Length: 343
Image 1 (cartoon, rainbow, N blue to C red):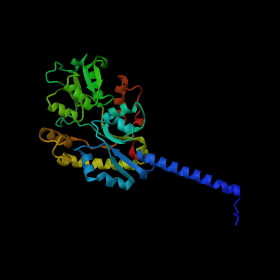
Image 2: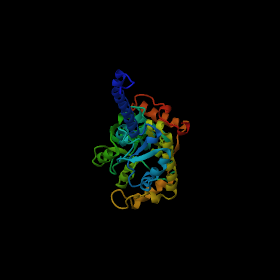
Image 3: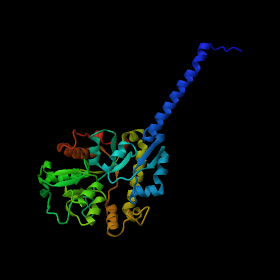
Image 4: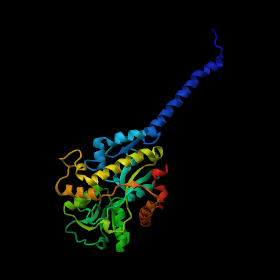
């Protein structure tokens, strides 16, 4: 029996079907790619975090699978990745999208944004100012070093993390002391590299940050100045790749809610947030080092969503970087901050 559809039209059907199949395939591929990067539809959002190690609220959340459960409610999930010593050490992972949410400070965030606009700060926590709290960073020298003050750094080599908190604090200390930054050689190294260079005498001083600071002080390093001694405007932050925040801001809000809740718990009972996975081995703390971390946890400030008022901190930090040639252009707060409640 002959079909009522003309032959010429019937001949086009396979081609049309093939084109439609290709379009469907491409659409699925695009959707899959966006999901892998943390973007795409909200239902496919993946919060990609670096490995939190053996301590802190994220380590506890990982062990208890808290984020896994809470993110389900907003159509998102969590993925844990590699281990990094600091925000600046995580930059390559952020660029490759293997990490899309991370903790750090305004200083390395604006340093990163000098080369792109794919990262935004969505939460901050004020720096601890209580004099009873343990210090968290410092400009250190060897115990027998002839360097006794910031003024003695003229002509010396100082290790700092590039366009990060270490470099920001060193520039601020030099400015306060009236020393042109050009008179001190900044050697750009991440915390692990800085520790090695300092230990082997390849640099004269080092602005140690994060876990590197208490470790080097425990080994006898002498501290010249702390960030807390300076009129710093830096803040602790949580940042995320822009596509994650725009695709599913509720996922970022749930993440922040979990961090806030656990931080409150850690302030009250810090011990259960230490040695989360292992109580023995190189990542386990005991004795004086454990006591320091417990004290730091008690004094820490709880993170909160960013507000317009936080723009002044961005302007101050980025302004110093630009004035000293670290950043080529000004960084505007609206290019850096992402207000969850406004979405």
